[in-house]
Length: 88
Image (cartoon, rainbow, N blue to C red):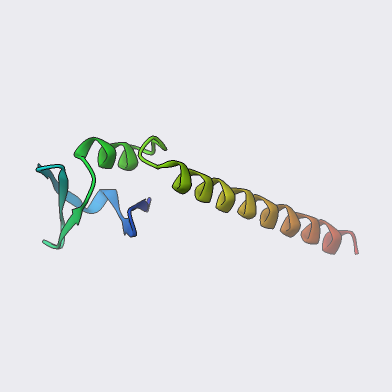
């Protein structure tokens, strides 16, 4: 399952039934009949769902980059620990 973070909401794109726009606001109707309102134009929401980083502002992009770099560091430390464990 792929989750996409838009604003402060995590959304499963596979669960979206309808995407509609209303005066610069995007409305998502989910499979569960829940409605999610996003304060961004539909183009930005579609970019987020498709995996583009263009929907992020500079602050969000830097935060995402920081989180990715931190995750890469964590993975590298796990790999080092695993290799160390294997060699013992």
